[in-house]
Length: 441
Ligand code: SAH
Ligand code: SF4
Ligand code: F3S
Image (cartoon, rainbow, N blue to C red):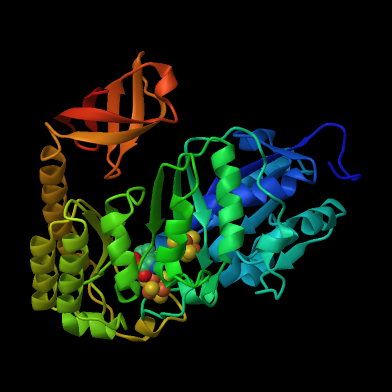
């Protein structure tokens, strides 16, 4: 604890929105404020500091922040010493405006500046307001301390790359997260070893464009292979990858690196070449399909997942049908789909927008097809024996929950000491969002 810490620990409540990178960042922010004497709480009404770690990707995501701030005003009225901070991508995009419009906010910190939270905390405790949305020259990962040694859950995220240079026409990420930056492999490996020493068996490497990672001479594949050599680390995943950055080395790692799990989130967004071009995705539907063929040739049981946007400006019924065709051809095990949302400052925001009813109708049709595929893939798991990393007890006594190699949630009757272990499970049932099975060894 620092000299400025009070004897009673202060309490920090963090609410996390958005992608897995925000989940990772929230952990690191809690650790950074830990050095200021904070411990985390899961009760906002008990907190001395509330941080909202926000997402700007769609309008709805950003709106949530303002409605949450309305609720937090009540807590602040009850406890004038409560400090409220906004972190993450809304902070980066609209931080100054938030400071002006929402007096309840004491602190605004962008995703690249959160290593400065301890100093910002001292400033707000002294009654000042603090705003930092720089893309600083100092590397936050160098400033942040090593990860705490306390025992951890068996699966953890590890950010290896941040930012994006792709500038898809709809997307705010290049503006909120800045240019692509990779953490040096040596640093990632050190953090990975520390996490494994704390009980982590599965690492998901994170990046807005994780397969553009260049902190290792062998790229992401080189990093994966070095990580695979760590004893005790049993599984490696990565997300999110861009089709144009799937290189031959990474594709072959899927074929011969046992610890690299057979699940790949490879967003395609649309199956129409016209729309892909307008989106500035810089590849065609055929390029994606051929890529999927190559990856599946390397790892035939690979489960694919994707993101889709419906109703991008100019999308016709024929464009939308092309997306359905691509989905039929690939057969996705999992997918996330969204109505196009206009984001200020992005090129697509200038274009005429499609009517809401058209988007809603297309989203419903797309999701019906994706759900059907997802159910079929889940059903096909019944009778198979798959590896499951058990993570926690289920709600029913004696039942444990874990994730399969293919990222399905799996329930099985098992002793509590399976937590943290990968065990073979024979799948016996398929429910809407999970599988059930029995230990097979
Ligand atoms: N870097 C990743 C995705 C980051 S954002 C990639 O390139 O795939 C996660 C998903 O949100 C995107 O894949 C996209 O499907 C969706 N998304 C991004 N901007 C959006 C917008 N303006 N409207 C609707 N969905 C959007
Ligand atoms: Fe956004 Fe495109 Fe970058 Fe993904 S690749 S973060 S969708 S700009
Ligand atoms: Fe959202 Fe920022 Fe992640 S906009 S999806 S929290 S990178």
